[in-house]
Image (tube, rainbow, N blue to C red; front, side, top):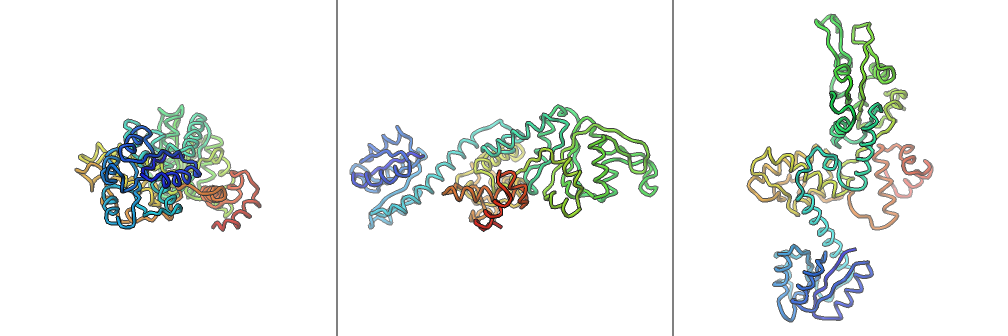
Length: 449
């Protein structure tokens, strides 16, 4: 529910528009002159003002100027002969203008867009005005929406269970590495080593040596000295295996043995080596499909997925989560980039929220850093400082919008759950609390792909 102020000298018009907005559950304030309108605005601080261009005691443009100075969101109403003046009102900051007699459907759509922009501005002012949270805090990393706060709670619970293996799921760039560090820092192992390795970046033999070490004379006789592996180095701390879905089949039983028996053998060695590590694994692959295709051991999968956490892509996160992430990125990069803007303009922020971010957090950080460099000397980041693909984004691939019906809410929720589980219907149905058959029927009903 929003508060809407109607300023028009014709009581019949304010009465009609007032009833229309009240049916949409908005609170309505009414004024019939410029002086009364400004007084009501200062008292009620409405979310939206619908302002007539011609008032008995002042020009609507003069009232607009005063409202604009107070950061009001304004829709102008004008007679048929005042189009030129209305265009001037748009240039001076009005969100839209409508000609009388006003078509209520058009007014409702224009009001919805204006209220959305008002909410966006308020969030932008609030979040970018905050300082000192730090880009590494869980709020800045994950977001402030209820969905992301729930994930933050899961992370905190998982961190405290420092012997439980953690499995992080999600697209590339969704912040799985940063979350792994967060789990480690919040756990009792936080003062011990945090060791990271990417399973997709090395050959099987190299990864075996990297993880478990090797004895002198191993690797076809090329190893001149014994090498301590990362599992030993991480003893007492956490070992983060990124892209574990790419772990070679020959190394999977060796890792499983570490998880179950806490012991292993170095490459080329015969002695049992023990290390007490907490494993944090991450993957952008669907491990259930990998198990089905015999590329990933089922017993290792179940050992890993005690408490899996799925990080949604940026296109599916709430707008306030993205604004929080943008603000945190500016805070983090600001000291490194002299004379860079410390905030984002509303127009630039609107474009950032319409972009789908296929590269997720990694891409967002790069775009913000580029914009801060391009905008050096400016007070705020403007649309011109953004890459063309961000400036021209239509918003069609973005999901953080407000659904209009319960049916649409259900469709969006099912689609996001399916995507979070990489299309696995069994796991999605389990999370949704429905049978797999019901989910399949809904997929057909809603034409989900």
